[in-house]
Image 1: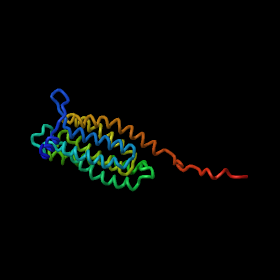
Image 2: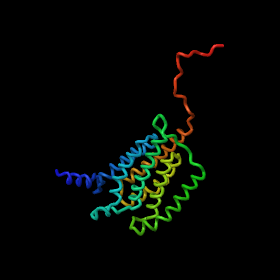
Image 3: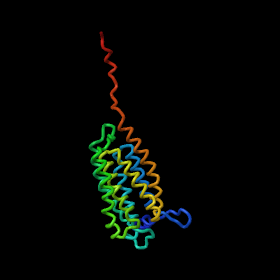
Image 4: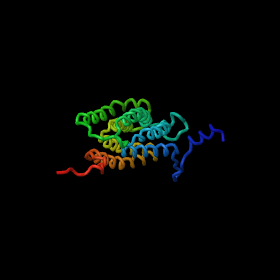
Length: 233
């Protein structure tokens, strides 16, 4: 097979799920990379960022829908597509930051955001959603457009919070999932909707893991020198 034909076939490949419904293969693979990235984030591993970038690039082509392919059956979700671009940009920032901040064990140390930072996250989420909704509507994004804008702004804040090492970023993801799952189901993006639903549970576990990691006391990892005996009276 010609390489171009092979790539085209791979790009348009679908997975039948019954009832005449099909899932784009690259949507499923992109979400699989996203899940792996989320797992790496929970474990506080630097490799979570490059793995996530691969998934974002794949999902970008999915959510552009009819913009890239007029024959595409699913509508374009510009907020979802735009957040993939945002993910890639912030992931590069997070990748660099985590490489610099990680400890000797290869992990970064999570911390709580200040009340001022928490207030800022809430204000930006609400104001940003209100401000971006008219833009997305003018560009023809899928209704309800405010939900698309909410997931876009919330995803930006959650990814930024992860890059900063704030434990609260998991809670922002939960707020994103609560709105994003119904939106994706109504738009027909079943694979991503199911992954978002799973993320909702996963992010709650991630929040607990990061909270406990933050409370752990420092542990001395060096063994005592056996050549040195107990102090003498």
